[in-house]
Length: 192
Image (tube, rainbow, N blue to C red; front, side, top):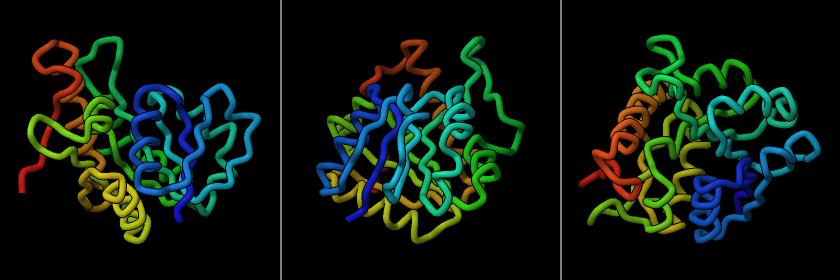
């Protein structure tokens, strides 16, 4: 059984934890404020925090993440202007995180989902689908198996380079919801 630590106890952290636990995974929740005082001994760590919190978390527990899978759900959005991403063109927050954690397997996942669609397990009439990108094939398979065991869909979206496009999709979805063009229970669906 895969073990998960979810850093972040907000709506996304809770929804992700519920999906993983529904599939039989052992899930531990860790509040952002508790990070510096915690020992992380699980197989996978999910960063269910805003992009702006990642530097502080890596400074506090980066050494504990060696040998683990780290799942980045962030969207590196400029929250002051809400009109751009704050990573260099062609890069991604996830690629930058992988460079900072060379002994970890960093995946991008959940950033194109809203908490409500993870909780309801639907987007409109379709089953919620999580897109997963990263360079470690076995880490992706393990995460996808945990997600699908929890009752929602998951698709291997390709290499770590695809995190760039996933962050662009997340940015678009967030701006559509913030501008009330879609609700927070909506989102992109994958039809097969």
